[in-house]
Length: 358
Image 1 (cartoon, rainbow, N blue to C red):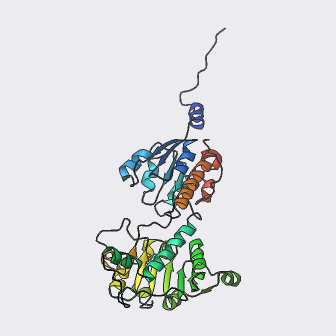
Image 2 (image 1 turned 120 degrees about the horizontal axis):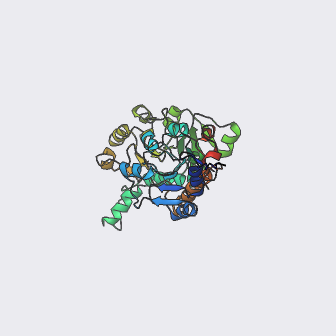
Image 3 (image 1 turned 90 degrees about the horizontal axis):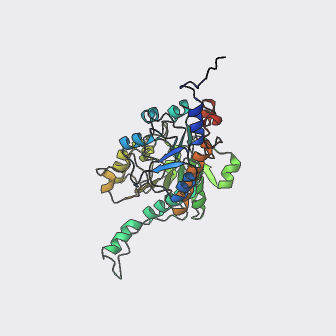
């Protein structure tokens, strides 16, 4: 009797599948984020964290993601087709942000890569900053601070020096009434402001009454408002939404606030408007190019307050963002829907059961 020994074919995929199911997923975090989220991911994954608070250079980013199953990224990281092509094992992209312009969402979805993001948790912090910019510009807080530091304060200062404009009882125009826009409207109530809003989707009358706000087309809002606060996402329709034509509609005493996306405003037009005093001032947290170009004409003007994209920069908010980014990532690797899911249509391309690793 002849016994024949059958050995597994070397290309048989059972062992490879077994290895993937039983190894820890490899995760790359593109910058240091609050530790609470990193700890959550490290409990179940093999984690590499870019050691600096500065973004990784593109070649470093590409090198690091080549063997990773998941990444936590931030705005400024180019998560594009080229990166995805060299990261064949990538299953989930979790961004530490509400915005996702840095991610090629269509390409990721086509490749069956899940995307999580962090809306909601930074609403109040961003609205707080928008109102702080409004107050800072209205009451010339930066100029007053510098005045004191320069030793210019005298016991009997001129009653005409460093005076600003009242906020109480004025009109606030909100462009884009999403979560943050609504939160801004609620803050305006405390200053007895009349609130107008413009949005491509109008609220029903009950919602308008509850928020105590009034709808106006954009041009009418710009003409009527003492303060204009931008809270619209950046889309092809909102790119340079506030341009020369729109700035010339505003009151000469008006102040423009932007905590949304820099490219919603045409910066060159805004610099001209501020320099020539078409409007009184602006408070900006976001810019067309970030970090801001040292040659940006806004830097030479004293009727604008500039802060470095810090709308979510509170301890509580950044920790919550870190944890939500971690939960989004871990949920996908467990084969369950992420809490904040940007591209749910991806499940038709690659079901959650196929990305499960833990």
